[in-house]
Length: 172
Figure 1: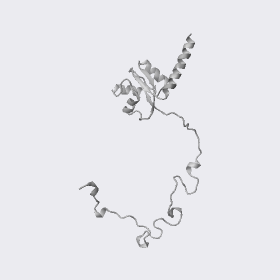
Figure 2 (figure 1 turned 45 degrees about the vertical axis):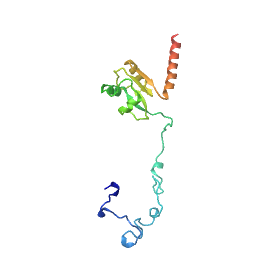
Figure 3 (figure 1 turned 45 degrees about the horizontal axis):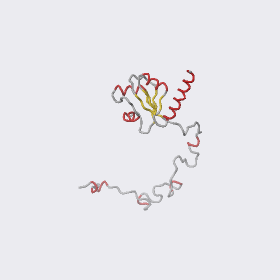
Figure 4 (figure 1 turned 135 degrees about the horizontal axis):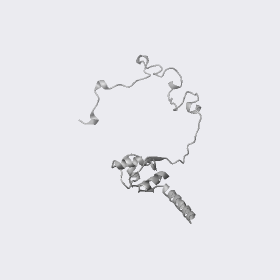
């Protein structure tokens, strides 16, 4: 016996509804479509949100707000979360994006930003697409290091060199 040769027993086989085959069938005359109107015609289909010609809800409600198409969305990872995972032995230095993914904090294609909620006691090297200034300071204070990866790396290098240039010019 093979799976493809199995058939349901005779009583279980239901026959389909046969419409338009005379009054005796109970589905003659209008064939279960009711009387007249758009829905009774062949080829009828409706657009989602169609309300029979009445102005649809999505057009009655006013539009407001603005969503920038150029916005960069980051998944936030806080310092207390990193510390908790280090304490549990799930993360160890250096911490990269793939480590965050393996632990289940972010998706494969998510951009990661480290934020400063909580405190970090372990000296770890952390890689991410972005860091908040307090988070970067807290990681450095704990004896660790931060590394910006991806498309933001160039921007960060330019910003850091400008900051370094401005600080050296003010010192001399």
